[in-house]
Length: 69
Image 1 (cartoon, rainbow, N blue to C red):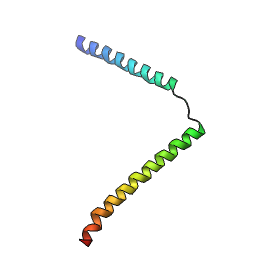
Image 2: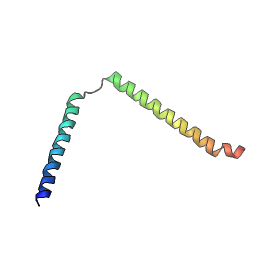
Image 3: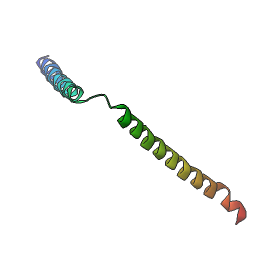
Image 4: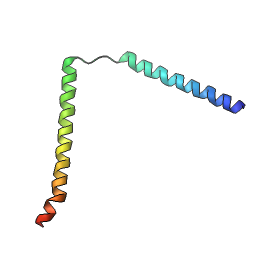
C-alpha cells in the first residue's frame, strides 16, 4: 500500500515537471509573422514535392523498366 502511494506521488511530481517545461516552451514561443509563415510553407511544400517525385521515380523504375528488359 505504501509503495503505491509513493509511486503515485512520484508520478504526480513527474507530471508537474513536464507541465512546467511545456509552459516554459509556450511562454517562449511566438506567432510567426506572415513572411515567416509563407517561407516555411514554401519550403515544406517543396520538400513534399521532392519526396513525391523521388517516390514516383522509384515506382516507375520498379514497375515499367523491368518490362523493357
